[in-house]
Image 1 (cartoon, helix red, strand yellow):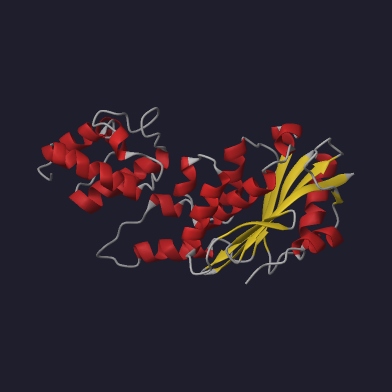
Image 2: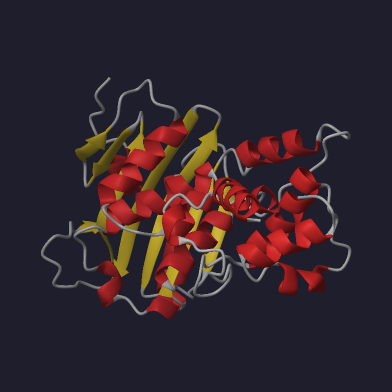
Length: 85
Length: 215
């Protein structure tokens, strides 16, 4: 799980151009939105694309994103649950 | 009386403020590298900058350089500060990037973060968000930097709806790019670092052609 979380962290920082984010300061349980990484609604759409592009997972209902994209850990758990990680 | 109190001009990998060159990088740098270095030179932290397309980065940077050491936004009410910009390439550069991302039907992953920049006036939104400006705005696509167009529209707004305006040209098309932004205030302010030039077509053209670029 830890390896997948680290991989996700790198992919998100690269794909969302989070150039001023220090990866070492982002923990597995940091909120992705709001106080944590400070992502916005467009970033949420980009995360949906990331899951499809890199893990072959298609989120049919965007409302599910609210649970899946809480943190790196919840994302990794979702990917594992889909048998993709 | 409408007065130009500061201006910035970016092209040839150089930045000039009020006619003086203040920053440059090697001409061999890519536009992306130049914009990144220019951002660092400002000494500001605005993480959203890195998410923007080249046109928005260029427009935001040029505005920031014009505002640097200037009391413009401390004088002007945010809801009465207008933004009027223009260019010739519209959002063509980002349109091309987006088109490339959807060209291969077998590798079809349209990027939302690229798509949101496929309009030329998004640069106005980025400047407005950065400075919480809620005044009138307009974006014109014109063949070249048209001082008469910009001055006329700025005067209309400044005489009715606005007390200040960020006005200029922000154009990106491949390796060709240029930004020229001037700040206009309706009235005279005690602004020790400001230049005081009347807003008219002749002055804008003069300022636009004033900088001696190094090559």
